[in-house]
Image 1 (cartoon, rainbow, N blue to C red):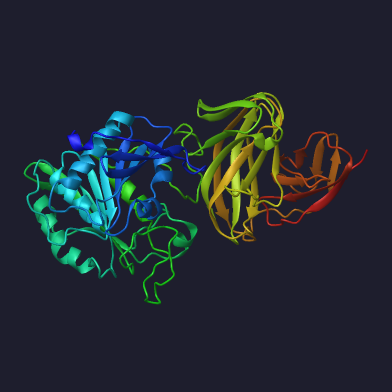
Image 2: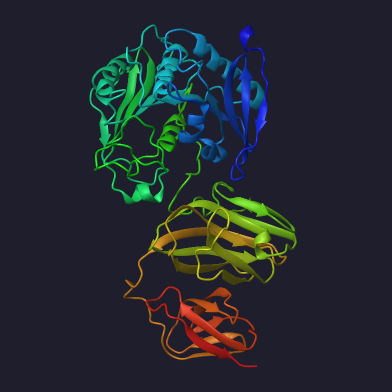
Length: 524
């Protein structure tokens, strides 16, 4: 390492409580880079995220925030600051600075040096292209955001052609979209040996792709163009352009509104989540070539991720707020082994956050569960931050036996749309190991179920069994006298509730056409 970078002074900064990592400042001489490293990592990749001209590290930490993705995707993030207001696009000063950061991250975190990526906005995007030109033997892939070298690239090392994605707003006239499409991109296609015509996907994206509920609700007008594989002088690479229709000079941040003055776009969400798209592109490459990317959990998703636990516990958080317990995946099931109870059911819980719930829609949650000995399990769908308000009319309680059983419940999202809701299983009120599998959530139509049976006829309860005179199967929601809820499967016109204290109870059919509650008494 160059002598001018010999001083490294770590300054620890507490990361957000919702994140599972450490954020700190790396000092290299008179230069600074803010580092974020997830607590759980194994030979992690490194993403270098660079701000635009006149901005700073603070901007990258906000607009190009990779931390939540890094927590589950096994990479460290470095947010370097420029020397003054600009990056050095003509000399070696900033190239040396970036190389010094890579060296320090290798020493401290044992990063995978084959998987170092560069990305940036505006002049930070220009710097990404410059790094690909000057140190292609160190940078596996790049993503430029509304930035490219306006005067082109020269004197590039030809040891490798770095795969690149450009994310650019079609309405950008500051670092012009037309200049990239008309001049810079053709020069790079020639340098890389790319096909003349791209494969175009329009509209793009079509799936969730890291977007929140507001973005998904808006039909995309953007499009992706892909040139590849590119081959020249024995080197293989690829180029891609994600054109964000109507975006001016900006980074496509999921929770930020478009500032385009055109009324067709102003105040509306961007079609894409630029940070998610950047990582999704970069993670496919190493210095050795294209790789099968490791799975990563999307920040927002409209289905349960890894509900069958085929990828271990990825996507799930196990919390112990009281009592004693251990959580792990064993033989394809999530096993919650409880040594001592807590103060409440929620003292021990399995959680998946990032679930998109849209106001006015109805949802059905299904899962399989069993226990080492008979016990109850509480289920909830709620906010992922204080006050953790439930979106259910009542918490769901299920009676588990030693036999693996399928359970279900439905609810309507009456609260405002939440792009970071969470599904929770609370097990802290009693001992006994719990096993979970096949957790899923899907939106369901309300009242459009002509084949579903109506919940009519006579209800009667005796000796731990609720009898229904005209219904053979389904799932019942039962509310007790204190409003506590449980779901009970029904077969052969009978639902086995177990012994109930005397009182007036209410029941409704969760998977039928009639969702009204009906009362039944349990006599002393």
